[in-house]
Image (cartoon, rainbow, N blue to C red):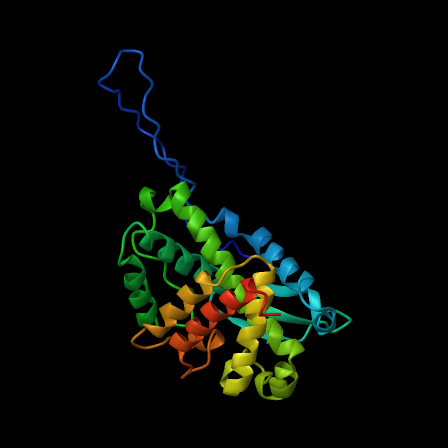
Length: 275
């Protein structure tokens, strides 16, 4: 298995500058804001493997038979791609293909959403940048991302949470295509020598069913819906959608309705209604 670092940013840790106070000579200096190194260490391959394990372990046994315990196959590809694929092992256990570029994208969107909490408008600005990116290579980084204020402990805690929820939900959706039979139904059309989004073939009812099953799978892993809703919101507000968005959602799907459904599923889950 090939793994590529999900962030190519190279930076030293933030250095605090201590300024003397105007109080007593021996008064303690004020604590400097804590910041993390400018790399996505907490959303590395280890985090991906944790999500993979949790999603598999919380599936019903009947669904587990349709997918591999090693559910996520990470490959070194710059373009953002996530799609169900047949397993590569001798048992042919089904998997989800996730490119290194897709993990980069989830890190960036999650980071932009976290920054938006301290700088309103930042998320929308980054989404506009994404919408203008019509290439098939690596996704663009959020603007001015090297600034220290974007890497404080508080910001990065939110980034990690959003990342886990985004990757968890989109992986769970693609896993559901295996155990719900969607991949088997459309695989001959998808496996024509290149990676093709299954969303190009799904009927609306099939997509809706996958979202509901994936929400239950994610919530059983203690992954809330806020991250997924942020990701779907980002795609929804794009004036034009890059090609890679079809790996995440079908063209023409009502993403505002999807987000309302996610919120309703979460409420139902905690009331014991979503099982």
